[in-house]
Length: 358
Image 1 (cartoon, rainbow, N blue to C red):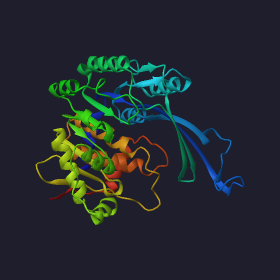
Image 2 (image 1 turned 90 degrees about the vertical axis):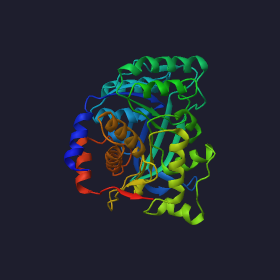
Image 3 (image 1 turned 45 degrees about the vertical axis):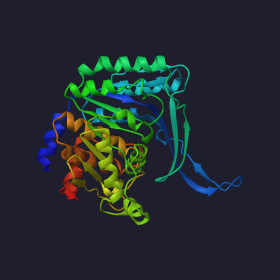
Image 4 (image 1 turned 180 degrees about the horizontal axis):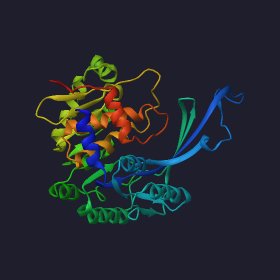
């Protein structure tokens, strides 16, 4: 992709109406340094400085996807669930402040707002504490979420399901007929799925699991990816696409009847399955000393690819932009919302024509 084409697609992304449904969370980040080991147990003591930026709260899960979309210029309507608590209020206030429309978000008085606390020392994440209730929504709330989603489809230019298996997306809240309705409307329906919920996304335009999720999801669909011990190691560390990943990507596309599958592979980039047999590989790059902790890279991929498709990109073009967005995020510790300028800068520094593999 040329920089001119990338600029054109990023410009066309501005103002696109994205309907985002998924698991909303509030992320908390505690930054400090380790000076010694605790005398009480063999654990590091993290010293947190007394500054405002030592402890921050940001939208997480589908909330982080919304923040990324908004940073790229999209108009975002959010559907999901929060608890009837202070954290839920903070999360919705933060999303409103960023420009999201959150009037369709439901409140579940039976569960807390999902909350994650990450303890960071330097560039290393030491500990994460999750407060959540991930069981499925009650039938009444699931039906209400379904009805709100159905009512909003006609105003959307793309639909994105951000699934973290925290209970919002179920067969009741996201039935197959809703997916079919979106596809009949001629707009992209994209999903970043967890393997346990893979059956929900039959017929979507695009799914973008990471490598381990793709392998697990294909097994849940009754397909055992072609792999051996050596191939499994190559899938994790090699620069070429392993037979296991190729088998899983093709199986997911066929079994789900989706138009495309992006398997994100971290430093190995994105394997794009959108043709009959060939796999298009969009390579990634790692700059020495510039790697963060990887948090939010998958969110950036799903957000940017959805927005690119809404702007008229082809699947490989969408993967190139998504890979660049993930590459920008990978440079940071904690979440980061990549800007169009950062994405263009990344592409300028890392020109890489996609390669095809059998």
